[in-house]
Length: 337
Image (cartoon, rainbow, N blue to C red):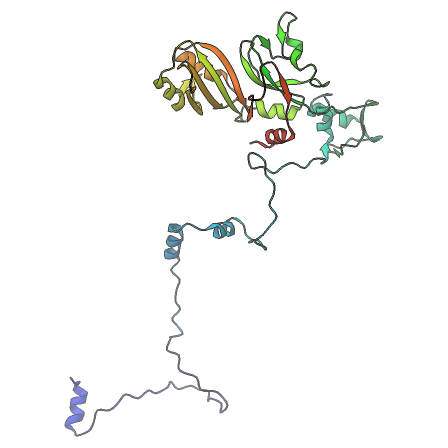
C-alpha cells in the first residue's frame, strides 16, 4: 500500500522518488590520498554500559574455582604453576628448623636459672656474658654453640627430655618434693630415664592410672596445660552401674557444670565389655568436669584410665613402664594448634 505522497506523484504521472543518502557537510575537505572508509552505523554519543549488578549476582551464584579463589585472596598470582611444597606436621604448621638462633632470656630460662622476665633483669644489670662479652641488650639472640656465663659461672643447657609414663594406680604423679616417703611415686619409675629433672604435664590423681608426660621443656608444658589449648584426651572409665543411653546423649549434647555448659567430644560404651564401661573423649585440660558430670548423673567412678593424651597412646607401653618420645612425636606436640 502506497503512502499519500506516492499517490500524488502517480497522479501527476511521475514515478515515486527514491530517498537519497546525503552525507553531512563538513568544513574540512577530504584529501585526495585519503582512503574511503565505510560509514560507521554506531552513534558516537552512545556508550554501552556494563551491568555491574547483574555481573555481581552471577558471580555470587557461581562458586569460584581454585584459581579464581587464589587470585581473590592474593593480589599477585603465582608466577609458576609448580612450586616447591612445604613439609607440614600434624595441625598444618610447617616443620621447625633446628639449629636456629634462640633469645638469650629464653636460653637462661630453659636452663632452669630463672624465668624469662627475671632473665631480662639479669641481662640489663650486666651480669650475663656471651663468649666473654657482656650483653645488656634485650632480645639478643645466641647460637647453640655460644658460651653463656652468669655471674662468672657457665650456664649448662640441659638437654630437653620427653618421657611418657603409663602410671599405675596408687602412684603419686606429683614432683618428688611434694611426695611423702611412705607413698609410691612415679619418679621411682623414671629415675633411670635421664639425668635431667623432669616435671609432669598436667596431673593424675593417686587413685587414677594411665598416660602422663614428663619433660623439662617449660614451653611445651605451658602450652599443653594452657586453658586456651584444646588438648585431646581419651579416658576408659568403669562405673559402679550400667550407663544408660539417655545419659550418654546428655553428656554428648552438653550439661551445665560449674555454672557453664560443657559437653564431651565423643562418648560410647566400650565394645565387647559390660555396659558400665564407657569411653569418653574431650578436648580440654579440665578432666574434673567429666567426673562432675558423671557424679551429677548419679554414677560413681570405679576406675579412671587415660589411654590417650595429645595424640599419644599407650598400646605399646605396659603399665608401670616408660618410653622416650620420638622426634616426630615431639615435633607434632610443638606444632599442634
